[in-house]
Image (cartoon, rainbow, N blue to C red; front, side, top):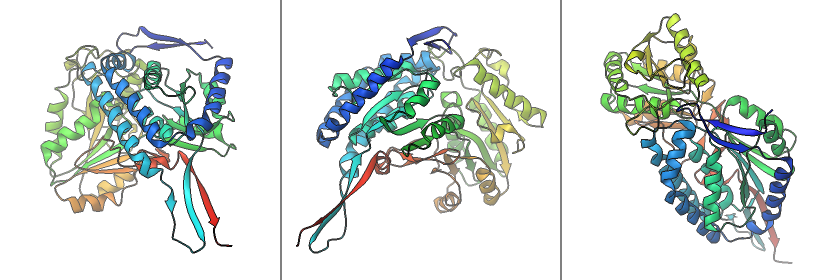
Length: 463
């Protein structure tokens, strides 16, 4: 295997970034530096950690133009949307910084005469963060900032598709004056990633990626008795009830399905619509999808960029072909999107009806600009279909009846439930999945729990 990482841009297939994979000596040195920094960083007051992390965010945001352009070339997001990832990074980071003092405060228990009793949340040590390419800053910040705020050291391994993201975060921390060894990154091969998970210096792993990737992490960590947080796949559903604000439901679900070319962890991949409004929904949705501008992501007019690579586009085309062979109806003419070229990463959006759960399109994660719309006759049918999935990251209901929506949400097997919105991550709420969407959680005050260990203090004062 080559010892060089080459990032091919989905814009034109050219090599955009080349880096050497870390050598064994470099890996050992980084782990040793992290081990050395563990004890000193955990002693730094939370207020000082907050000052440094806030300065890091300032430095990161100041570089937003370069960051947006690099995202465009590395993973194909239209350049017009680059600022959104920077804004999301800032929002999540600042929220977790502000939440740290209360989240990390000692847990007080009931008073007992002659004793002092409390529980402290202590840093676990070195947190190894393995991040994906689709939202490279948003997914990584979920773990990096709270880990450092909790007194841990962090080692980041970013996707080979977005290696510059690790470097930009490191530059921002360096500008903020973070002590050496507290945050580091490595460009690693798959085999070396497994080896780092097994390294005795690593005390916790935060992984975002595919289900097979999560299986690899669990196997590599087996027998080490360390914490493993996993955010994996999704096939997130939306249900549009007959009483929904139709225009809002169409606008929101279609954006949720096609933003970032459908390459969103919590993007909408299947839509269930009440039979009474199904045809109206489809008519409005098709009109909206046809407004997308497919093209090079460095073109300011583009609203739908290429998917990450040609093989990803071919996978989605295969799902659509199989669904049509089983009776599904396509509503978007690819000829209306001239940039769509088989064999490339450029893929026209597609909306299909007459779909069912016998089709891969409705059960298998697509991670591309395609969505199936299925007619339903009742809340009960919608609930059954929404739960008929190996995944459970988010689910959405669109309705004018909040109580009815909530009643549906209580029956859904999902980590996050929305009413009248979708495809959004609120840093004040726990981000979690069920079934094959993973385990553990990030963000919110609860996100600090997996990045710390409980230590009980039981002091007898009366002898």
